[in-house]
Length: 178
Image 1 (tube, rainbow, N blue to C red):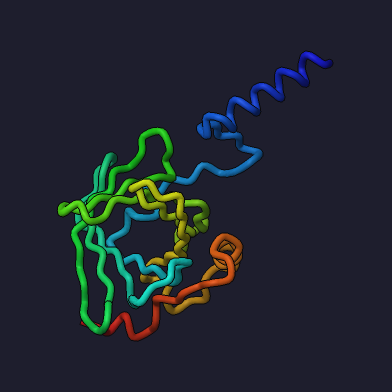
Image 2: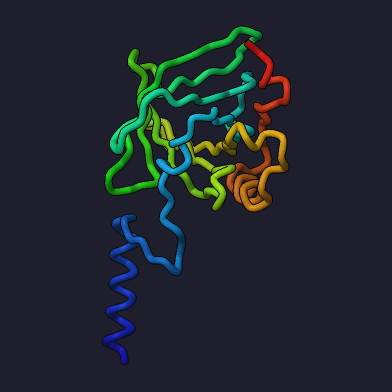
């Protein structure tokens, strides 16, 4: 009996140490491809990062099994900013995508930590890849669900990760801005 317990403990420790273990009883293995493979815009409804922007939107242009090319737009001081970004899907961690810009001004990792079954919303952990240990959290929604209430589990998980400061970026008028 002690040998089985020791083996189970060592197996669990090895899984946690590698951060690669996918135990079905502990959590679901999310696939970020499922959420981003849509022709409709994906909005960042809210974020934990202090932001002076509104209407942050991602629009997919090209997607393969390994990468995605998309445009990220937002309004900063009433001026629309648009950036062409490339995301590379991690072959070992399906919830992860590394994003870079052509100019090299953006380099970050985005991990889905929760995604609704209907793919209407997702909670995304955003980590800059330039030596920072800062983690930010976004609540993202698909365009087709902007007029519906956000699924409560998405909201609950986002709020628990984001902490006290939540910045809402999406407003109904975002649909009508040029």
